Image (cartoon, rainbow, N blue to C red):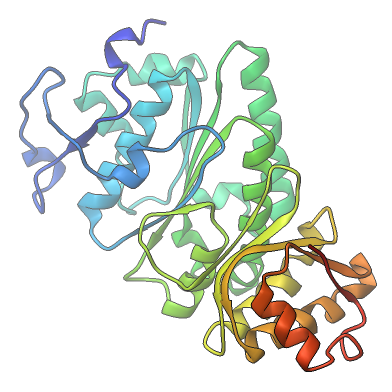
Length: 313
C-alpha cells in the first residue's frame, strides 16, 4: 500500500480550537494547516516511551493524529486504545480528513482502534505480552514495528489497576527498549490527581512537560536507572516506585549515576526500599553512586542498617 505521499512525520497537523470537528477548516495539501506542534509526540522515534500530559481536548486530538500519521508513514502498525468520548476518540474520522484510506489501513492490519478497557489494564502482564506478540507479528509481515497510543482515562475508576500502573509503565519502558515499539500513554491533567500523575511521569523515558524532580526508567540492559533530585519531597515516591516495580526488574542493579542531588531523606528511602525487596532480588547494587550519596552512606554508617545495599563505582 503506497504511503509515500504521507511521509512527513516531523510535522504536526493543527486544528482550530475549540471548534467541533465539523467546523475544522482546511488548507495545505492534505486539507489541513501544517505547522510544527505537539513536538513531544511528533519527535518520537523507535523505543521511545512518552508520558503525554495534556489539558485541552484539541491538544490531545492533535497529538494522537500526529502520532498515528507518523507511524503509518514509517510503515509501523498503529494501535490506538481510547474510550468513547475521550479526546481523540474520532481518530478514524480525523485520519480520513487528512486523506488517509482508513478502511484500507484497517483491512490491511496497519491500523487498529478500540476501547482502552479492552486491554484489561488490571492485567498488565497480559497487556505487555500482547504488545510483544503484536510487534513480532508486524516484523514478520515486513513492517517496521508497533506504535501504541493508550488513553489512561479507563484507569480512573479502577483503583486496583491504578495502583499497579507504575509497575506496568516501567515494564512497558523495558519492553520498548527491547523491541521496535513506540508508546504514548496519554494523561488528562484535568482528571488525574497531582500525586498519581507525578508518579506516572517519573517512569517514562520521555515526558511532554518538564515536571518532577526525579525520573526512573529502564535501560536497554534491563537495569533500572534513577536520576534527578532525591530529597525530602520525593523520598516517599522513590520508595514507593522501587518497591512497587520490584517484580518487573530483571536485575538487582540500580544505576544512580544520574542522581544530581540526594539528601539524608532520599538516601534513606533508597536504602529502606532495597531492604524491603531483598527477599525477591537479594542485595541491590547501586551502580556509579555519586560522591554525595557515598558521603551520606559513609558518614552515617548506614551499611550496617542497610546490609542489602552495595555501593559500586
